[in-house]
Image (tube, rainbow, N blue to C red; front, side, top):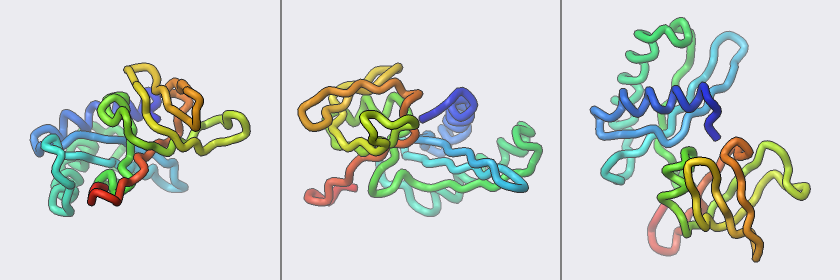
Length: 159
């Protein structure tokens, strides 16, 4: 999930991408040996699938903004992609939006010995998400979540 620096990158990315009809679903930042790698997962405001052309346009816009901001001193690798068939769920608004859907959550610190938790999103707000795991409700602060993806429902052509 988004920590303070990644949240800032996501919010700034939202502003940059809004002109393209896109928003940031999630951001990953990996520290490489020579330069950081930024991965932006983007969605379209109209909820249509994100195509290669839209990712390329978003990459150009984000590169321009990152270079202009000097955020990484011009030394970074940037990747832009769609949320994918196992749609990334990265921000509170996505957890809220996808209430009722099955999700796979990887937590930063194991809960009951498990780091990967499959469940259904029961409810969410700006601070936490509550999952139905088996027959138990589990509430996680977003700071506990390392990564989350919707479980694809291939039975109705969704993904």
